[in-house]
Length: 337
Image (cartoon, rainbow, N blue to C red; front, side, top):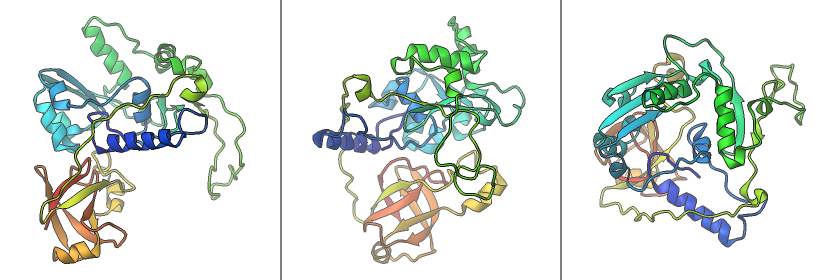
């Protein structure tokens, strides 16, 4: 399931319903049972583990507040999030490239890309893993934790800002589920099965031996002896498209064509053009043909894409790709022409 860190949406409702189904069928609260989060970003699970949660009314929560945005482009992703930020008193953005959100920020902090630094993340299966720098850092950019430390210092709060390993050890000692972890343990390796070539670069699968650490999977709540609780999620009204409207459902293509891909000519040429897809019957009813350039509009968003026909899609639905020029984040009713 998916969940957004900036506000409640339909995916949160879906996750709640899936959890309720597991509860009713007795597939929760026991070892080897439960849900695995399919997150959009590498460390969304990590944010969840340390306590970040969506809020029911983001616009209300941000009104008159100072907002600190790290590694996200809410203005470019969703007009609803952009509207919520308009009520903020002050906006600070920390990122590696210029985005639609940096354009409205009061201050921008230049951060290092993950390829320029070391650190940790937690995958969807709750495996805590290390990553390592691949290239030298450029300019005056700094690691995210170091920037946050400098900002905190100006507010009279002392945070560790010199070493990723020390930051992780402090974090591990602050969270019950991570208390036995250490930076060194994450770097430990042992034999993995099956053995698949390793020295043969043309062999499929895990070609090279892992020498940088396997990480450690966090102990599930059921095995730790804790109580599993399913959070209540606000029920959302079912989408009711009007005449000449469709239900637009966001989908993720192989590449996220956001600010990190668009400047890269080599990748950008291989992603292809944005396409929306619908059932042939739906297209015929709307007098649209495959390959035509269509316009899609919803909630103040307007975009164009090529039309593709797919008879596996439900009639009355149009699939719209995320991060390809159309700011769609959750299912909405839309007009296509």
